[in-house]
Image (cartoon, rainbow, N blue to C red; front, side):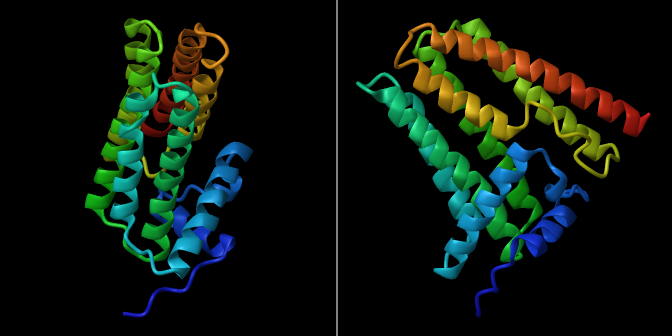
Length: 219
């Protein structure tokens, strides 16, 4: 079977929008837009060399995340853990590119991707607990982050046709918090706690933004 031709950013953004409830990534905040454009560039490169399976890339990203708490306590472990999170996050973005461009987006694949995201974030949170953040704070931050995604999913099932709102607690923000938080622990042992406190605050603000949007759309 002939491999599909890679799409330029404009064509990809239109197809991505159709898959994600009509939300146009070209109108996203700069951080989200830049992250998606990076994923598009990497996914296009992989497509050109014959990589076409989104689920394989999702699995690779999950495996990389599973290694994060394993290496976190090694000498210079936080640096390696941060690099693993970056690679895992890129894989998570690229799998979506392949699903859209190679026309392999499936409902089962969407469920697998969402589950892999939550498991990956659990691994990152575990690394912060191992590095000294209070367990209650880690659980609270993770719980609100996951509630954010759960409410969006339930609102979609209830009839919300788009993502509702792009909040301050979207996945690119969580990725950057994890990466820079891990790097900060190389210089201050309190950084793990500070990062989890910041993650909880951002998650609460983002959750409030999402609830407001969901209420407005579904009322």
